[in-house]
Image 1: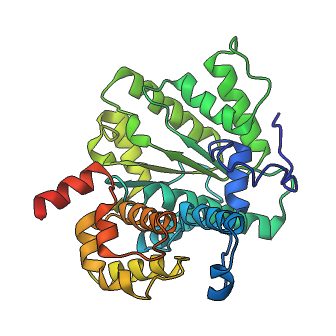
Image 2: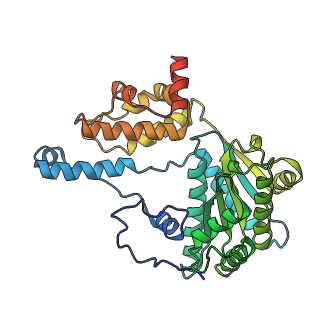
Image 3: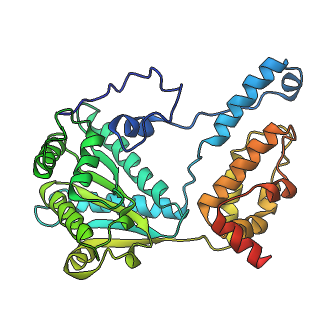
Length: 342
């Protein structure tokens, strides 16, 4: 069965949040339960009178605050949450082939963020309705690179922390154990990230697809997938791909257009800054420049703003300017596009 971590055991949780990724049950529960820690700036006189030791501790706390991704309720996050909830409700009494959802888009367009937020909202909703208990309402795994049915089954087993799985167990044994645990745990939402790694144009991809189909038919759960440019990755190839296409809704993510929502995203991110000399609306006024730097990609924008904030703490400027933003490097794709357009 499952080794279930205690929901009340917070020992070590604040020492190193990176120990357990959300692809494990312990890491997923920590992700679900963790709310962003609020951080209030000290009054200016108190900040200026700090000792060196106090200033170091204070700055480290602010760096930790800015290094954590602040989830912005973008239109993508809202749409995925809405469509995902509709599907879980539609599938609740379904005994045949259940409908699924595929989130497809370019890099850094918020696919994984939207997928995880959907799972988090669903689990919190279930907990509010029925309490925690031993139920595992959501499972989050990533498709294994160059995957095989065995590797996929092991991803599920690893998430569930099934202690009885050993190297001598074959794929059928592992799959049976996983399905038994998920059924007993009343799992009703399964999230599979990096689905573009599954190419149905290969024999391994076909076998992996068949195995995933087995899971969908033997588990009373809604399956939600996310991946890069899924519709062109080979996922919908052939008869197997046709079955997936016939059972899943496709949602596209992409760069935000330069407009009111983009300006609102910049303003929201600016509102999370905790810098002592940053002039309000500085970034909002630079929203066109930020769009040029990031190509409208929410992931690139988040990286740029958070890196600039940490840089402002480290160099003591305590404010973000265009010159400082210009010195921050983002992903290669955004940098290349910006140099081309400049």
